[in-house]
Amino acid sequence: MTSSVPVPLRKTGRDTGGKTGRDTGHGTGREARRRAAPARRRRSPRTAAWLFAGPTAALFTVFFAYPLGASLYQSFTARRDGADVWVGLDQYRRMLHDPAFLHSLVNTGLILAVQVPVMIGLALVLAVLLNQSWLRFRSGWRAVFFLPAITTLVAYAVVFQVLLRTDGGLANQLLQALGLDPVDWLNSPTWARISLIASITWRWTGYNAVVLLAGLHAIGRDQYEAAALDGAGTVRTYTGVILPQLRPVVLFCVITSTIGTLQLFDENYVLTRGGPGDATLTPVVYLYKVGFQQLDFGYAAAIAWVVVLIIAAVSLLQFRLYGRERRR
Image (cartoon, rainbow, N blue to C red):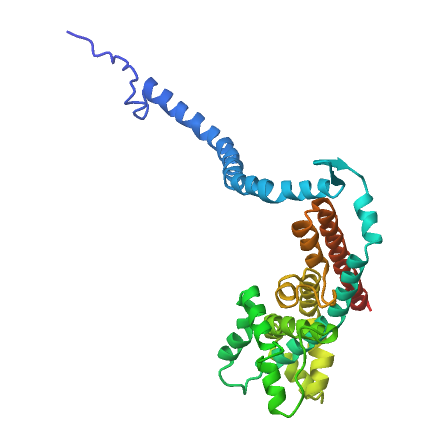
């Protein structure tokens, strides 16, 4: 007679949920890799960022940072006996006694004082007109007025040179048709400045008008309606309600226009070559003549850095004045 004593069964991998020692080890390795994955993910974005930014940083260093530093160093040197010699601040002191350079600053100041206010004023009027709901084909008009801004600088300067020609120019033909005497536009100091201001204004008024128009679109119609309910007329609405809110956009246009005028080169070089008698000479045109005609690159580099400092100072002054008016 046999006994029916139960024999304990050995636990197998199947009895433990199908996990054998090998399977458990595999799961442990997978768990370790899962824990290590976040660390790799934290390093990966940095690596990717450097990979993407590396070529740009290299191009910036080669084509911008290095030439900038080299020009700054060159502004403290002079060419003597076929070699660059360190002269310290001599090039900058030379500018203080250079009548041509000082005259170029005066010319730029006169152009800036007349051209920028006139252009911004015309751009404001044009932006308000383009913002009117009764105006038909508004998109077409905006494109027409913006078109000069995308015209090649040299191309439009050549066109103005042909239009303002003393003999046979369209401007003088129109004056003669009206019974007036022709004007020597490009050979008279006063008329040369006026011609230069007119050409710059023609090119950039539409651009600034489109920028100001974008600022007008950001102002809600409810503010116009609120001003009308308070009894404000059109002029009072724009001067008391709209223009104060448009001030940051106006500041942007003023600063960019000022920088462009201080860097003026293409228009006056093509139209007048800085003449007549240096009447339209600007620092950048003078820089070109010193550097590429006289081959005095040290002095030209010094002029370039002085122009940069003037632009920075004028821009900072405009920001300061704007901030003071805003706090008031």
